[in-house]
Structure formats: structure tokens, C-alpha cells
Image (cartoon, rainbow, N blue to C red; front, side):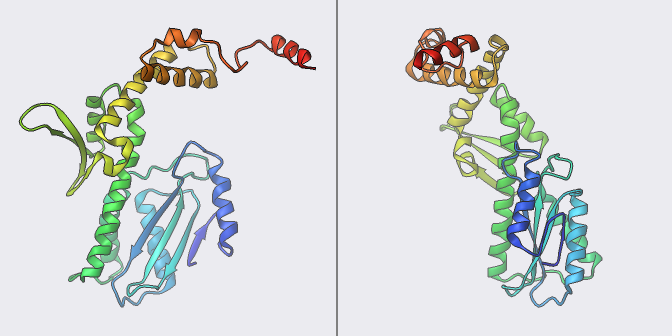
Length: 278
């Protein structure tokens, strides 16, 4: 451990507890921990203090501030490197955006390499090329996943999703059947990296994206029709709607079907019901 802020870095279990406690301020974020790696040229002689300083400046240039982090130095490979663990829930409970971390990180790393007079990789070995390529490939794939995940619930159709993604530098491409305009699949591209929708995540295949859009519209319609209901009641109706689609029955029929739960009963009736049981 060469640096930290806001965590008890002398014990990994306590550090995890500190991260989890701060995460509790905002449970809506599914991926609250950001993990980055700063790798140095093989044989580079650099002190722990300088490594920590560079890592902190790396975070600052990303705009990542006011949150917990830990800096761990590893020397288990032929090139020294620093693992940076960051809590995406900042000290005020706000979410730190992680879009384009991989894309921006490369430029920031180049800047810091020149600033601190570090060795630049003039010739890459096959092992290092594969490692760096894999890290960048996975980093961009994850960034695309996050971008789609954040924008999809807001979209009324795939055209709107395509528009929103392009504003965040993600190109959405369709695969057509032969020379027709029948869409067979979808892919997403950032720079030279291109991924099928299912490679990003199974839920982002073309057919599943269409289903997600249909569900978005259905839920919005439900909110208009049943705005007075509680969140749990809306979720129940949403499940009934999905079942009605699969069984080709009407929503009205589903709503009129007797329920096995007493969630909708007035409190007074529930009370009488309990007395009868006694």
C-alpha cells in the first residue's frame, strides 16, 4: 500500500468495510468500485512516493476527487505497476461518472510520462502488447456497457438510443440481411474497437434491445394510468403485463384476476382477517 484516503489501509477487511459503508449512501449504483492500473516500463526505477504522486495526479486529471481510494503497488511482473481502487460513491453520496476512463486514461498517462521523464514504450514485446491490448479492450467494452445501461431506460425507440450513444462517442451499427433492410443484429464501436451487442452483454443483442424498448414504453404507459399506485404495486402490474404479453391475454383480464396477496386490502380488513385466523 503506497497511499490511500478515507479508508483504513492497514487492514484489507476494514478497508472493504469502509468502502461498503460509503457505498450505502447511494445503493442505486450497481458497480460502485472503479479499478485502474498504471503500468511502468520494464526495469523502470521509481520510488513509492513518486508512484503515489503520479497516481493521485492521474485521478485529479480524470476529475476524480472527494472520494475514497487506495493505491497498491505490485512488483509481481517484469514491469512495476500500481493498482488504483476508487469508490464511485463520493464523500457526499454522489456518483462519480466512469465513462471513457479507458479512452481518457491513455492520454493522461502519456502526459504524465513526459512530465515525470519516464521511459516511453518504443518497442513492445508480444507479452506486453497482448496485456495492454486486453486491458484496453475490456475497459472500453465495460464503458460501452455502462453507457448503454444508463441511456436505455430513457429511450422511446432504438433511434433515440443511437442518438444518445453517439453524443457520448459510441457508434451504434446495424447488420442487415443480405441486400435487404431487414436488421439481423447490432454492434457498438468506439475508435478501432468494435463489439457485437451480445459481446457487450446478452441483454444488448438486437432482439433484447427491442424487448427492452417495448418494456420501457409499457412501463411509462402504466405510470400514466396507475400513477396513484405505490412502487411495489406498479412492479406487480408490470409482472402481470409481461405475463399477459407472453400468454397473449389482455392486461384488463389480468388485473381482474383474483390475487393471492392481500397487498391491496385496506388496513381495517387486514386486521379483521387476522382476528378470524385466531
